[in-house]
Image (cartoon, rainbow, N blue to C red; front, top):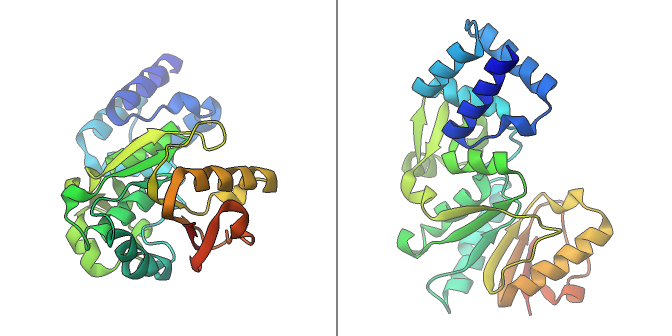
Amino acid sequence: MPQEYEEFIRNIKVLTGIDLSLYKEGQMKRRLTSLYEKRGYRSFREYFKDIQSNSKVLNEFLDRMTINVSEFYRNAKRWEVLEKKVLPSLLASKKKLKIWSAACSTGEEPYTIAMILSNLVPLSQIEILATDLDENVIARAKMGVYPERSLNEVPDDIKNKHFKKEDDFYRVEDEIKRTVTFKKHNLLADRFEQGFDLVVCRNVLIYFTEDAKCLLYDKFSASLKSGGVFFVGSTEQIFNPGKYEFETIDTFFYKKK
């Protein structure tokens, strides 16, 4: 049995990019054993065979493996401000924007940015860098398959245009996926690229200490070009934006001076 589980881990990594060995073994093994037994499989080998050949089984497995708290168009009103006010203002002086979705989790945020931007410019002009510390969520993001609950706030026209329904799951269309490049990045330890027109980092900074937040605001500010915009989550208002060379242009949107 231990050998069979190790083989399962290797096979899953090759198939999906997800490394199950990064999780606590006892806990993960129990969770997976109960999942495959519930579905009537007798072994990890038998279960993997179906994961490989049946998209429904694969999607259910992915959903169980990564705890997905993110959603497309989360806090829809803010995305409306991005589409109607912020992006047109940035595009007024530049056709191709340099965009970073920081701590992107399983990819809903950068794909949302791409979908919104595709209403304003051709897809060929869209390039988004999306980063996260967790290699498993990056692997999941690259696959672009999501349970229905992740699409709760997605307008129907967007759902029909940019997603393909597969059983109880939705797959992001390839031309949107191609606009996003995913990379591993540690916000606290790694250097930040420079010259961004838009940096989006939402619902992440709440987990950091005040000192770490100050450090990150400085780093994000330095990564933006003058006139660039920083978009944060709905619990992450910056109370002293001037300290970081920001000015508030709308709720949760800050412009670099």
